[in-house]
Image (cartoon, rainbow, N blue to C red; front, side):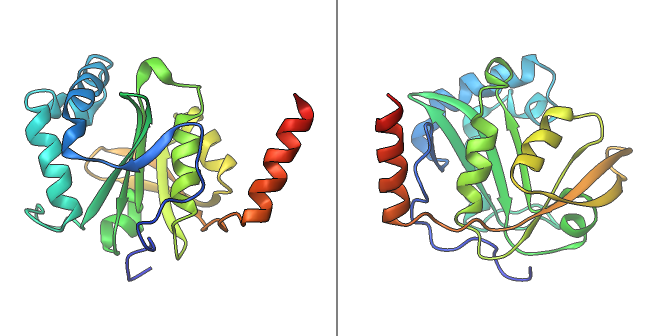
Length: 198
């Protein structure tokens, strides 16, 4: 896990949501997403709500490896969208450091509060798994049962509990593996199967 765990930026298998890297043109949708997440008390968005446009620009800068805070790895942010609405966000950290190995993991994600339980986080995580070239680490709070289910559905292998010194809480650490990309025959078989069930 020393190199970036993500392959080429080509589009993995489509999902029912549009999954893709964040763009500057997402600013209006991102602003609405940030406001809802901040109103729900999500810590990351407590800061982002004061300048959502600047925060989005910093996410794009971090993906390019620019203006990284000390100790941060280049991190690409991805969105699952339904039309113009951001449903979930996933951050993929490229490389390894003590934070990724001990408590942070390579992947962090969250779902828009009003869209929880609709499968957006699962779809986004599965989409990313198809682009991975190596296993990655992912963590979630012990109390976050929804995330445990999402990670388990992604084939997460439990590695144990880890203490996050900054947040002063225990996290569960998992490893997830890359998923094979479906072949044209797989997609055709799925489409044919879906047509037969109609």
